[in-house]
Amino acid sequence: MQAVGAALIMPATLSTVNAVFRGRYRAAAFGMWGAVISGAAAIGPLAGGALTQWASWHWIFLVNIPLGTLVLVAGILTVPATRAGSHRPGADVDGALLSAIGFGTLVFAVIEGPDLGWWTPKGELQIFSWVWPADAAVSAVPVAFAVSAVSLTLFVIWERHREKVQRSALLDLGLFVLPTFSWGNLTAAMVAVGEFAIIFVLPLYLINALGLSVMTAGLVLAAMAVGAFLSGASARHLAARFGSPGTVLLGLALEVIGIVILALIISSTTPGWLLALPLVVYGVGLGLASAQLTGTVLHDVPVDASGQGSATQSTVRQVGSALGTAFAGAALSVALALTLPAALSDAGFTGTEADQLADATRQSAGTTITQLQARGATGPFGDQSQAAVDALARGFADGTRWSLLVAAGFLILGFVGAVRLRIVAQRT
Image 1 (tube, rainbow, N blue to C red):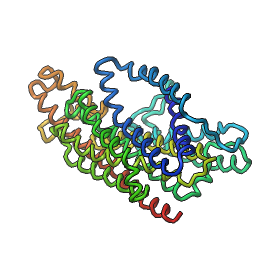
Image 2: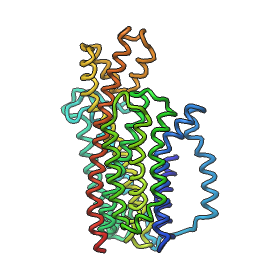
Image 3: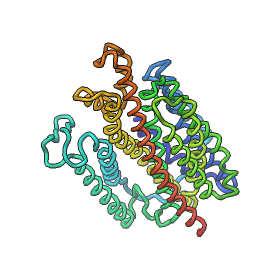
Image 4: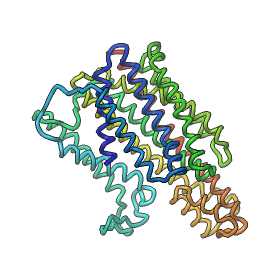
């Protein structure tokens, strides 16, 4: 229910900013919007860590009740009502179902690929009473990819049909005729994939490999929020000098630099304050890119189509965030399957028991490391338990490095898209 509410809020905020703010106020409004979104995404782990450590995990949901009430009252009193100019009949239920099936199966396939097998089944898949057997001719993953491709293709065909018969459509494909809208959304998708891949992987590394508390890990991640808030609010000044597309390029360059430096210094013994430094650089880039990218994407969208344009932009970001988590999880799982056994072997741990420990660590996303350390000498390796913990931590750090490099790869793709976005923006 909270996810449905969030999905309703995000495009509404964007379309309101796009419709209400014009002229010299527009860049400042989008800059503040981007800074708040980016900073909040980075500060969430800190708030969540504080709530779970000092209250209980229930409060990560309950906190939305008072906050939601305050925002609702403030919104009613201050936010002007804006509406689209056209009112076409019908609700695009079929389009919603096709998009949900298409994106849902895509995310499922990416997440479950390492465990279920990318082609040959590694194990059975059970959903309630339905079972995909382990001895099937092919894994469920390629089937999920096929269902996704078919569903998304049918979604595009259906949306064109809705437009042709002048019925309300979930997605206005005509907006993609605008070069800034098309390239901007592609860039936003790549940035979202990279951003949420980082947010997904880093807490696991900080808590399980470095052994930091939830609160301390949140403080390290809050370095991103510091950079995002500082740069997002001031991005309009850079945009006035270099233009919005140029500011996006600068932001993405800083993001890539920050993540590459972070990947290079990651180890099982790296102090948290040292990790925070490149995260500040990444956060500065995130604030610059997010603050100006949204305004650039919606720059040529007519006011009457603000709702459709902002909804598409929000959907692209949300799909990118889901895929970012999926790709990061898949990359981490694949990397750990290689780095954990190698680290254990280098430390002198071999055989079936070591293989099982490596697999358990991979399956638990590193939680096994903290459990083994807590058991100490009573663990399966006796007085060698600490040596096993150190080896697993090294292997997990190596796996995290590969996941961050995958995230950096998506950010580089976003940079390439931003270069193209700047070219087409200069032509319009």
